Length: 153
Image (cartoon, rainbow, N blue to C red; front, side, top):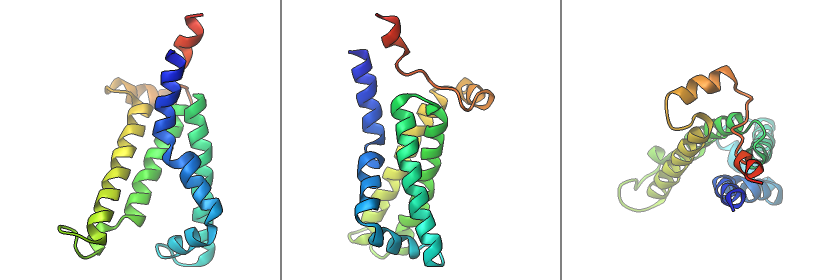
């Protein structure tokens, strides 16, 4: 039961990326590149951003699900959430931020990205300051999310 709960919680944490956002990048590649091209100069750079985003979403999500270098993967996804919020959720550039409209919708999407980054940072560092030191001394270490499962057998 412990394994199941830990796995489900981790699935919920990465569900936005794997499978949904990664699959959307594959199925709607042209639209994704078009959106990226609005934030960066040049189509080639936009394609690189989408390919890089796809790789981050798949590889880091799998690392979190398996527990292999999951703390580093969580830090990468936290950074990814913040960068995507700043690049694609620019509510401050849209009208109607305080009332209705695209600005207000983007504001909530921006906050969701930032909140998700906070969840990933908790996974990366834990709930106290000593976690930052532990991470800094062993950034590729696993949090061993399924170790209680093996010990209870």
